Length: 482
Image 1 (cartoon, rainbow, N blue to C red):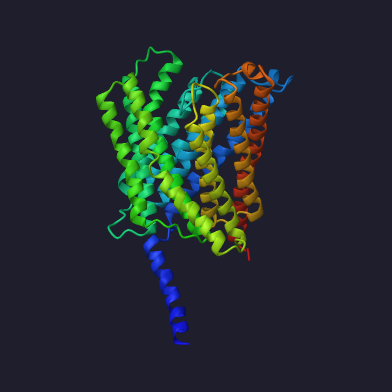
Image 2 (cartoon, helix red, strand yellow):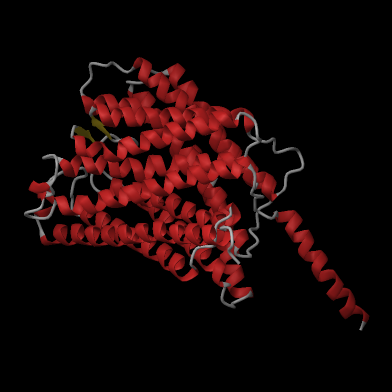
């Protein structure tokens, strides 16, 4: 019987050794002023998604015969599309990032952070209502704009708020230390995202100072946002990888990567970020070399950490399914759904990127896959954070269906774009006339529209799930509640 006793006693020790070797990828969430600040940022990013969803509905209505003439401006579809994209990508990502940076910070200079939140919220509100004032839409890469006083004012206010938060983050982020555990590796990733955002701000400022103001609108904004927009992708990618590792741990999976390896992979991405100023020093912002090197940095430097982390997380998912086929507990199911959907969408986006030839709608398909992969990962992270910020957990069934519905809709949307791109439909065709040349093109664009509609429903369900959790949490903590 002794061997059995020794084996039984050794099992917990083996599990402890495994945890110490591979790391518990989780984060402690403070309950002080930093949590209150983070709640403000998360409220802003959820409000931005809600506003982008409302604009998406108006986009559909603007293409409905008989309804377009009742909209406030003649080109409402184009200007609303700009605001929709900026709210659902730029405002959503950076506001969520600011919330995470608030949690991963010391208590230093909190008034600066609150000022940043106030500026960013005001700017986001102005961006949301700017389509109703009209203007000239310019579908520039990374940050599409409306050439109007209202929109540009909102964009500047939002950017100023984020710059304040990033500036504070550079000196208020806690040190990781030499004894690196799983939590330390995640903090290193969050700190790295702050650094990437700071370099992006540097790139935007440099471009603004040197890009000739006399260029036409499209060329001007492409050059203005190209360098900084590329660097922001590094920050988004780091946030997604942090979310993947944390979500995998939260649903009971052990990712076979040590914290030091994870930190090394994050660090490789940061090396590429630090190369950005060198490109600005070496080549003019208007040069072909500048353009190509920024793309090359993102393709190779930004992608090196993704594959190892993704493969390790997928291995952990498969291993968990084989070793323990029992269903997950209800609170873990939304996290699992978000993790799987994010891995699939980001992977599909990456695969499509290798098949792009020429300028067609495969390009936005690649972009959608990558961006939506980040979005769903952050949605899952939001579900994990809600009860830790003093709210209730989201309804498990609703939150699980939301992740699958949003991910499935976006997958159909991407499939329609790839299908249409295979038949030569060009990107950024405003009136869709080119998309009606053949039955195949019509079918592809129809599939894209169906997927987009399903994704809109999934996005609004996310807002609903968060609101339910917030309301239930508020009732539970109200005076007199039991």
